Image 1 (cartoon, rainbow, N blue to C red):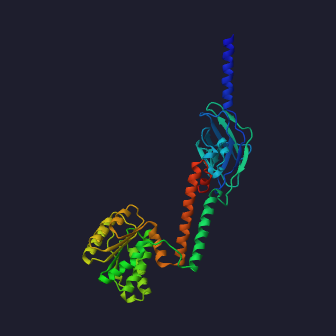
Image 2 (cartoon, rainbow, N blue to C red):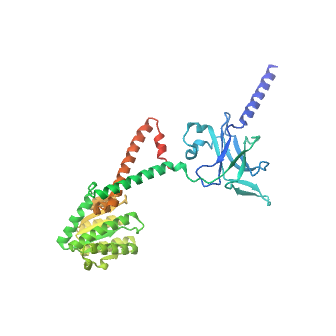
Image 3 (cartoon, one colour):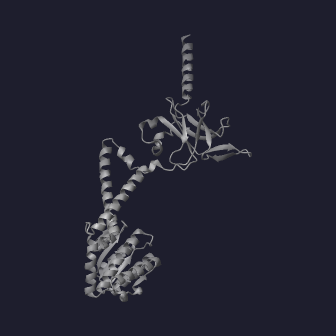
Length: 408
């Protein structure tokens, strides 16, 4: 008799446990998906205490209260938590107790027997139901929840990006205004740029040409644009010193732009008659043909100064070694970190990374460029401070500062 009672008790316990696994969650809510352009609904609900790997939640959609209801989404009980979407639900610790599902499309039976996908329409009212299943049984919520989708004017998840971008923009504009009142705004000295006048003067004394070498990228490259700005400064100096300037390119558009820049430099120096368009030329289009042509030119004409500016590849060491072998003063600048070691070891001066971008502001002292440079430097200093502070706080378990700089 006791064994029979024990078996009945075990059966009742198993049945009660199975029933508990299929209890519907509470706090079911439906709303428009925030921060989107419309066409999506979001359903959220609180997880149950007896969730397991085999439990799944089924979301169905109807276009009218009477139905019919069509399948729209399926979420496993071990996934789909609100903590997985902090951009939408925030970083509250209570989000770990809630599931969510996005409803953007649903399956509607077609006349052919196959299902047809229908998208959620903006402004239309939909009725959503939530059900829970273990694969054998399904329990459905008795009442549907009403929601409609609409477009949002502002993506609040990117508010931090907007604030940071606005602060940095205001900072740059403020420094531009300061630079207009004070053109002698301090910038850290860059030895390679200070040495340009010395190198050009040496070429003038020796009666030898100056060779300006562009990198291998086109005018859509930032490094090529920066190199062209430096070329304008070099052209004005060589025109004033009456020194021959050779400019080598491997792209016809870069050649055309360089010709105009050099021509304008000679005009600004009051020596338009000294400009020779043939001195700005396209050496070759192929990488190593370009390097071979310039190596031959260096060996024959033996320029006193080589200026290599732009983005370089494997030809960097070939060019700089040849220039070093003829005894030329070499000033290089590139943002190609793979070629920087070769320039550092073979050139007299090397502009590394962002120094190439700062060159135009450094040389011209133009207020817009100078103010932009100072504003960016202050912004970078602020970011470095935040990184250090954030690292210290995260070490002690306070990671809230990272949320301010998370890009969603």
